[in-house]
Amino acid sequence: MSPEPTKKLLYTGPSMNPALKEPDMIYVTQYHGRKIRRGDVVVFQITGSTRKAIHRVIEVSESGITTRGDRNPVADPYLLRPEDIIGVVRYIRRGKKLKRIFGGRLGHIHGSINRIGLFRSLDRNISILLYPVYNYFSRSRALKKLLLHRFTPRIFSFNTPEGTEFQLFLGRYAAGHRPAGQRKWVIRRPFRLFVDESTLPD
Image: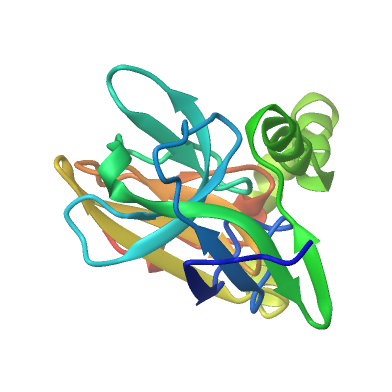
């Protein structure tokens, strides 16, 4: 079965890894009145911005549609309306291979599996067994300089009604965020080992 897209887009960024990887070609199909389901991977216009995003639907309610990147630690800080959604991702082309992207219940399961990975396990183990050692090294600037060259830090920002939200990625991993209206960054473990918060925007 071949895709019949209304749009083709080139995917960039790490927030939907490993379901989507840069530079996958994304095939987007309009809903044409069909129901938007939890688990769908959708392309949408970010509220108050000219930017587009590709994230997974995690909740559909009377209040609106909530989305989140599979690799992001928190849900997107805005509610979407059906008219904000450009279409649903049904297929991607990765190299020479055409890959189906599932939505609905199966897509929700895939998204949940994608969020369970090495760093979540490592985070739990460090918290329980190695917290004193971890806490010491998380304050070590020398260690940060030694390890940061292995990752490419990237900061994404977008406007919300509450202000500007920032998200920090190290390589393809969502390392933390600074909520809109706040000056303090929330850095996930174990990424505090790699991040010098004094260098981040305030």
